[in-house]
Image (cartoon, rainbow, N blue to C red; front, side, top):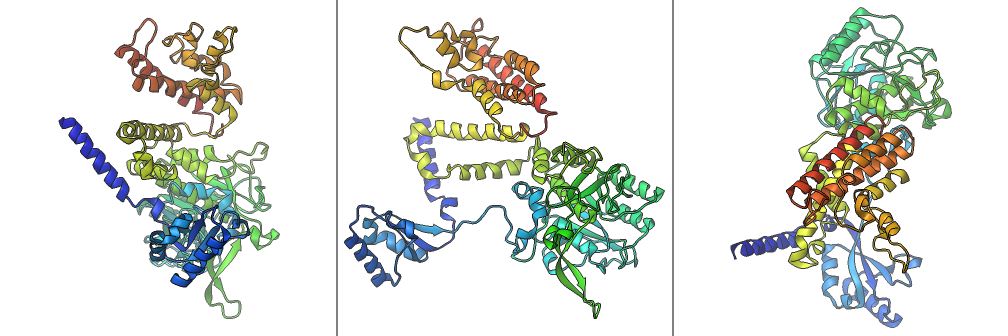
Length: 603
């Protein structure tokens, strides 16, 4: 009796919370109201209701479009007060529903007005990366001509820097180059002004080592590298370079790397078959430039020292071919500084793209600079024909890099925020979903929802891949078989072929005899091992094997945990059967993970 009372109180409390929860479904903004009048309403009555609304409330409903005539779909300007009034009025008797005309926007696209001109950010697939991280908590040191806080850097975070040219703390820009570079990394974004940056929640550390003419020496640059490492920089960007190897620079790079700093440098703009220094140094990521079509920019160095490529632009194709950011500009008559959105080109513009993505990776939880370098390279979009190493590991891909960085990284806060976002996106915050079916359906629904999310999260975190027919077929075969044949029957024909076709891989061992018990040889990791060994070398069928292995793991895990009494031949249906299935489910997951380890992210 006590348990029943507690359960009842729980259900009442949950129902109250759900009914009063102002979820996403009620949080939208609107300036108009939708009135869907009944389809069977005669035209005369429809006109009467429209006139009554106009007379009583001072607003006239209008057809939403020329296609709304048959559906009687009208809209009227109004706020929440008018919405409540209309729902309680006699008008509601003549409508199928009255609801807000909520305003939607495109997702994860900044509201900066010139963002549409930033082809470079879309080419590195940064919008998808922003759904996971925007670089918060990471500091990027910009070793350059300094950084001036132009209007579109107003809300960007800055930490203390230094001017090594003039030996002072204020590291303002007197050239425009460094400010442009800083903008690509962390321009203020979603401020309704200007353009966007890649890791726009990161902080910028301005370090001036180049004069107004754009020149500087290795002593200042080496000191700036050490200053960045000693003052909390996570990433260093050097959009500079030249000829001549320097022990001071090499020592500074090693010092910063040993302190966990990721170091990025431009490959150079001499069209030469080798990158400039400091991109050539060990532990520096050398970046070549590509244009808006993904081809090598004509000026970009290539060959030795190039680790990856990123958008650098080509302004010979017009301003729309360059990299657009706000920077300082100088009046040609008075030489006074001002602000302007300018399209630059160069490997100097390519490097900060990689620095911004490195900040996103580090914000995702990866701290080792060598691992960050490996992630940048492994996630890059490979260019198959590249005999002269124009592109290094390939084209920079922010979304793939962040996804790879988050693989296996458990973030408690992100796990739950992602869970509630998943509930919202799948409609599980609707109270009716939980109430329909009554008390008896509540627990199965909770198990279903939580179980579905855990499987989706597990696949996302530890098995990142793109879906193909081979992968999907393997998952179906491994987990549920060709279920359309389950119970299939044709009079006077042998049934065992249909039972085989309708069986999952774990059921194959007993499907001919029609037994409901699992055969331990088939309901185990054995068949997946055979499939992996046979098919792993094939570019397409390997994904069938991996999919089947994950599917078998799912089937065995669900059978072990949720089936009333799973039965195994020779073992029975006790705890031993459950333990056997569960252990083999984990072995299958481990096998799939190992098989995917060196396969990248494209299935």
